[in-house]
Length: 148
Image (cartoon, rainbow, N blue to C red; front, side, top):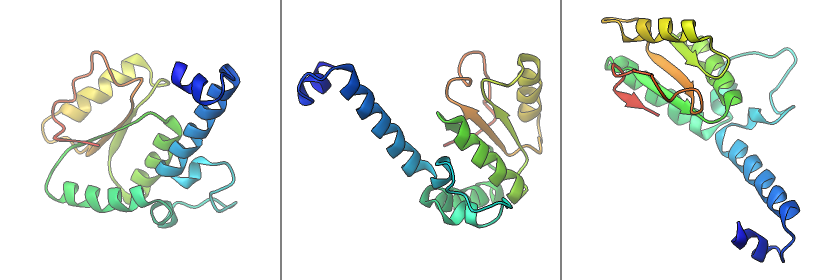
């Protein structure tokens, strides 16, 4: 904090806020361009290959998830951004991967039911997407062998 203030001539909170805003925009750039309002083509909005092709991370994830699914792996994907979970959810539906989602809006009883279904022997659920804030205490997803 004091380093930020010194670097910006002691401008204080305004400079720190500007820097944090810039960092958030850079995080959005590095995750997926559709995190920016108006970047997704549409309307009409479609879920197809453009969801993958417009993000380098999604290109790698697409290849990786197919290989993991093929070998029978179970995957957890964590993100700090729930809007990125929205994009991942669209992707998983489009690719036909069975999944669960856990974020701050997930009801507590639904949360435990979904965790139990994911952990069942022979579960058809391949992927669990979680926000880092919601996915912490009291969660046992030990049947997953891959964390992204």
